[in-house]
Image 1 (cartoon, one colour):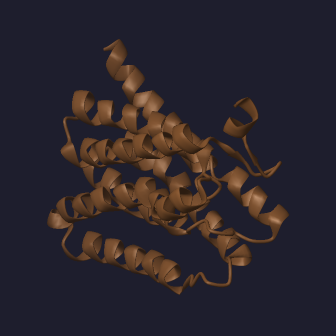
Image 2 (tube, rainbow, N blue to C red):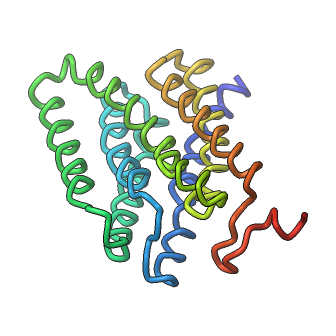
Length: 218
């Protein structure tokens, strides 16, 4: 019971850390006046993630799932808005806004039109959305390897993702035995480990000082 109670409380708290982690990146965008090589996919996915997981949690009667994901939608929407304000010239945000609109319309339509199948459909869509949100930064992997710099990877978000995915995987396996919860978080954990490997190889870039921490210690 103690472990169950812990896993009903800690994962939602860990999720909030993930949702708050990009605030530092938003601050840096404002300081530099550009998003540089950073991609918007994780922020869009966070917003969409909030929509589908709130719906899934409500359909399953699981407040542990739907309650914390309200903030996923709110923070995700803020991050997308901020990213659009400072986006680099080569980035087109139209697909990002379209994805959010389609997700909201489709989720609402399923809940109203086919409520008996909505949980199954939305749950499987949610698996893909979580994988995209946590794996999104890997879209910068080519740039990281080419420049030998992790400037385009958000370190705080990566660490928060690792902790979050471990806790939600445990919740999905040991508390509710629901692969729709643990599977995408296991995928997210794999993406986080891959990103941590890049930080281990190329160091942690300190955007405030425009230097790599690893360089200072070698």
